[in-house]
Length: 279
Image (spheres, rainbow, N blue to C red):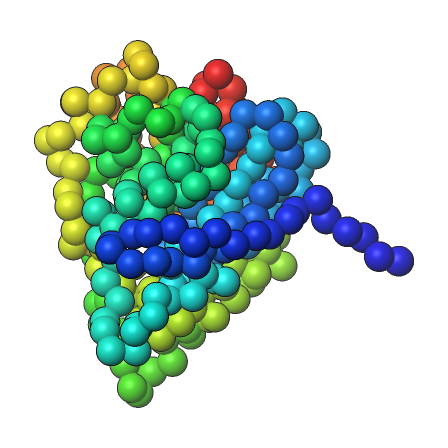
């Protein structure tokens, strides 16, 4: 028996970094727009459980975006002659271009890991288009505890290396099928893409000492972190939330760095709470 999901996918061409990018995005639902961004090395599939949640989509238009080079968003023309290196400025340009292209009015921004870091950057430097920010597994800065060059070597499979790193940040309490589905996404990442994302996440623009400039009275900021996350620990998230006047924090038990995909049932009530805080 066939079972169709309510998720629809489309493409839109935006300009970022001075050249066109054909971007794939998926959406479901109606009402308050919520634009969602994935972790390093992944894609929109991390958000599929939220987009399939009828109670959430009854009041929210959930939109998940594949960043350039990720998922179904191809690299830009000429990619074969360059090294992929994500930057804060480029990421922000993509987000703002997608909000404009989709003509979103007062959207909530939700992002995880590197997407959570950008939530904080947007809240500080580009808050105007947004209603509020949900920063998942997000901190002011996170130095690497691993060697990112392992994810793009001729003598190692980058996808399997990525999945190995990811496995250490997935809580064992989650359902086995979804833990492995989460790892599969990283096994499929394009050569060097995970490394280029992690370069951004661990070496690019730090927010240490800057977060006090965020005005949560106008645009709420809610930070969420899994207790099993050792890349962005609960202590990291608390330090970050404490630096933002008026920010709120939720620690999710039994959940790691990829909550919406590794343990969707455990993540759901915390995401519903986060959406309520945006209202």
